[in-house]
Amino acid sequence: MKKYFTTAQICTDGHIINGSIEDNPELNKKFCPVCSLPVISKCEYCNTDIQGNYCCDEVNHDWLHNEYVNDKSTIHKISVAPAYCHECGKPFPWTETRLKYACDIIDMLDELSVEQKKQLKELLPDIIVESPRSEYAALITGKFIKCVTGLGYDCFKSWLLKNAIPLCITLLNLKNQ
Image (cartoon, rainbow, N blue to C red; front, side, top):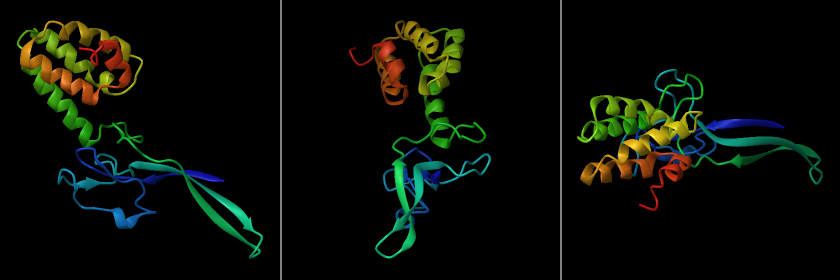
């Protein structure tokens, strides 16, 4: 039994176009039908294929025709674009974009000091993917956003609800505010 990942096609904004370009080439696109941005299937840093669906090939005997056949089944279908390349660890374009816009929002939070903004920006990667620092990042982020009001708070809260991992959203108690 052989288990492996297929290659995914994802637009540079993070919309999954095709979970398996090998199995479903008819679904491949050059540009995203949702946002019109270019579509990629390889890491732009190391040229490694983006992992898509997790599959399994199994060889079974077809007793009726007395032959061996390959049965392919998908164990796990990709449903969320990965944030970082599994080979080189660099962020994918959609991750870079999300982090950049979060930094831009943070820069406009007038209630925070320059040092607080810097610290908050450094914690962003631990807010969007689970890491040993995620709980700490949520704690510090929660302390800082309590100081923010108005449109800045609304924009940053909206960004967090769309991009933070569920653990951080729960710890920040954002769904109830």
